[in-house]
Length: 165
Image (tube, rainbow, N blue to C red):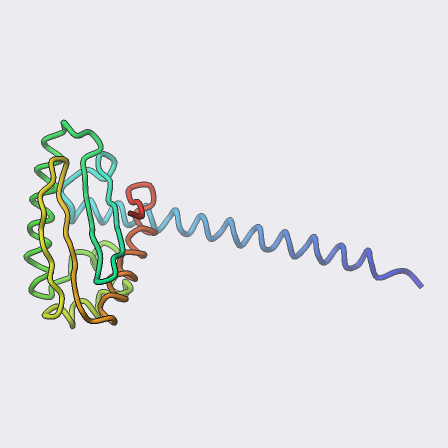
């Protein structure tokens, strides 16, 4: 009777091949999602994603979202960043998270919770020399978790245009 070892080897090779294909498909899906997010983002955000960077930093009481021009002398991008983040701050303090949902999808993690709990979240706008920031602060641990989930999705979706702070 033949040893079962060659049979196991074939199964192992087949399993590795399937996992590699699944991994590649996942990368393609992520690349496609990031391309769609960039296209939708261009409809919502007035600045050039290829000339700017988003940095998302989770904090114990919320998070900090910073958007900066990659070229600190690019006043056009800096002005567009500031204009957009001021508008978003005005929207968020009213519970209007439609812009991020339009970019990332209506089922974006955290958006429903942030929209519902907006009265318990302080959103502060801070101007920076190279762009602007929004600081999200809340004492509600569920809303902190929602902010973190929301940031995590944005980091994933924006790909090379975003960084973890």
